[in-house]
Length: 194
Image (cartoon, rainbow, N blue to C red; front, side):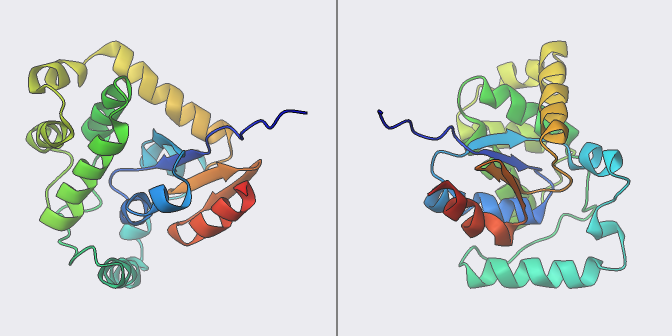
């Protein structure tokens, strides 16, 4: 029987999620063929009656944990956006448009680095356009795409896909039919694929 390579593992992430950023910075070493799927964490949380830890009493502990992980991994010091957690709808639409050209990884990393290393607000269109510039996307095309009904629908479809896969938080990876949630579960997801 011929060898059949496993399908790329979906990697669900939210651009305003620092744990998604931490996972995104290292997933290529663990799951190089992961299929990046940018979702709106607020939609995922709402579907499960949850909210971001950044809006709870766990905020200080979570911020400190993210800062320690970033420092330990040599990513630099996190500069938190003033309004974090902020609305990443425009950025998610930008990533959805970027996926049409296979640039979702570059766009997502650019956006999250702007947010967590520069303290930029992903809710601001200028920041989204800058992420696009850094990813090699034409600014005029990206600006039009942010209001394009087909891009909006594609983003809704990815959110629906994530919910159907059982995603309740980000980052999450589905590998070998199992859901692995959290930056600290990437190694487990990679092991499940081998």
